[in-house]
Length: 181
View 1 (spheres, rainbow, N blue to C red):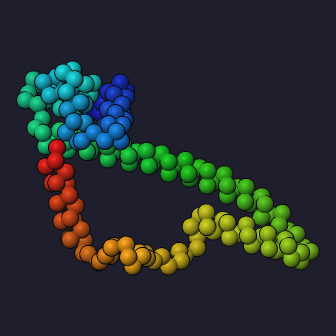
View 2: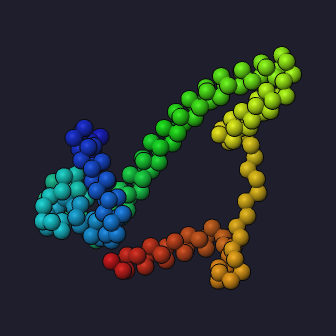
View 3: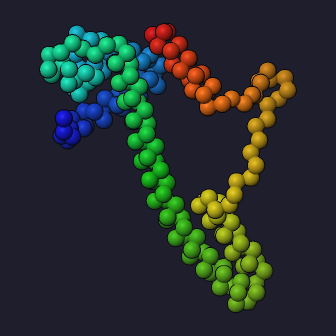
């Protein structure tokens, strides 16, 4: 199977956006999956959703995907869509950071020239503030120690857990979510 054409990619992007919208509206995974299924026999609206879940099987007249396969497809769609959105936001932030660095360069040049030429103490302070801002914005400073503190009467009990314990807990949570659907 090759790369989908432009129309198919657009339909997949729309399906992913629809999946996120449905989840944000509080719709459970199975309902999301059925609403976005390609096979009208499975689709909750009884229509073939364009590029819907199980489209390959539907096009070959095979049995529709199982409930678990539908849920997994919906989960994967939302995860990929969120990852793409995060990547887009990160790229835009990188572009903005580059512009801000150029602005800081211009400001620093003026303050630095005055600080070095005249020994002007306010200009020295300004140059240091610009340097601090640049270091914060670009993550050059080491982070200060972060501590999680809960009020004594909150009932929160923070404990340490191994990676295996966390993965087991996540697995239990996913099973419970499937059981409630």
